[in-house]
Image (cartoon, rainbow, N blue to C red; front, side, top):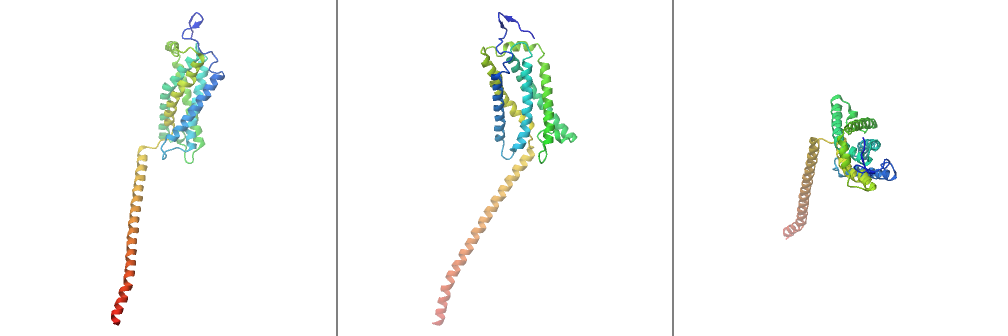
Length: 272
């Protein structure tokens, strides 16, 4: 890909240098973005209903696959952005947005296909979100390898798509209003990826985690409601029985209190 020049400035503005993504400021933004994305996944766990909330081990098994896949894609994008002619920041953000849209569709298809094969062929190890009881590390490793394989397929498809000449015009247009290289790098490495990653990580985590079927959840809620009603009825019956026993005891006490003076008066009349 070649870049035409007007005077000393390339068309579209060569704002970021070739090593802008890998210098100290670039790596700082990348580490900050990773920390924010990790915090988002922690917050997602606490947003789950208490009855369906994953344990920390299952949560780690689910999110670690996504973390390793995102790291592999990110490093590939950083390296590929430096291989194109022109502003590496624009090439990085184009790759990133394609990964977050077309790549997410490929990930969804791959995960659903894997889950279908695991149920049809009995390959429990590749059923995403299922690790056995107790959770098996071998199942986690198998799913990690499969997910990394999906990332390789995604990156291959996106790289082939990037060979179209259509992206030359996109590169000249995108981020063109920004003139400051530091601001452009912040937009490319932190601001835009932060909001896109929140949505992408949240959706992908829903793909990867085991979700109870609606019939099971309805059955569990029905069982809980029935148990609650039975406990309430038991408490009410127990309260009624206690109140009845209290009434009977109070009646016996009254009879005992009244019998003695009646007996005494009757004896007095007989003696008289």
